Length: 352
Image 1 (cartoon, rainbow, N blue to C red):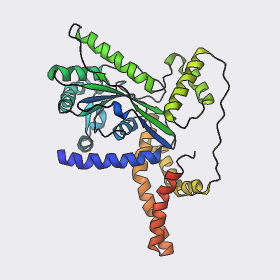
Image 2: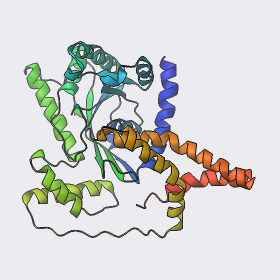
Image 3: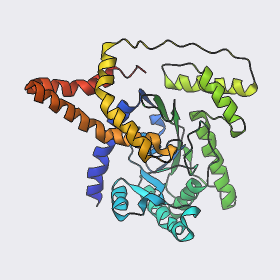
Image 4: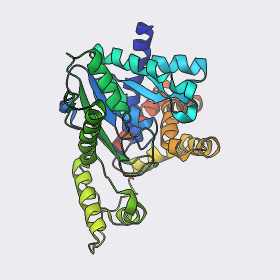
């Protein structure tokens, strides 16, 4: 089982990393040096369903296990495949008390992974929400850390806050920043009660996450986010972009009078851009149609769109190249065309 998991997980991670660089116009990773060796818990903000997990896993050399919503494990075949991807189920009260009791097995598995020096990825907000905000963190990550240290007191367990900042949560060919923050040591003060110690750890993780993302408070979200979208400028470096966005939000919350920044318009006349658009028109159209009819929960739109693209685009590349070969009878031309499609997409990444 371990060998089979390795044969599935590693190649799929590499392929997903390549696909992420096609899906996003810019995919920037910061703070990888903050990830220590040994046992680590990635505490990740959660705004975009399973795309958040894919981005985090592909942004470092560590190969995390994923704490995943339990309802997707109902089908035995799905459960087997998900286990190959190093996923373990976590159940909520809405899933029923009987299911929630199974969380004990999940936490035991996570402790086992950490005791071996591995990595566990968890979303401490507990659910996803496509808004630029950090919702109150639940104590699951603290409970996991406490249980691990309780059973293995010598373990140098670290919790790394991971911030994912999307330029836009739904649109294809936008930009994303994945930032690994400074690690938080999972050391519990023995003079404190367990609830007090876990609350202190929870606040430390929250403090580590907030600087890594754009946080617009719930109380002013609707008004401030609308103004923010209308007034934000564009920086080439996404770390500077995040800093600029954070400063803009602070000014908007304070009620400062601001003028809209202007940005350079895209040159739509570039032949290579239109070549790429033309060659991707059919698969992109089919994906849009499938999303419209298959996706009932908008929270999953980007994640499903990315997953469809991973498998449909190579199929259409091969199909279109076959037709080129069929009509030209020249294999070299067909192969050159096949190579040119992804290359055109790469070289036009900067275009909107």
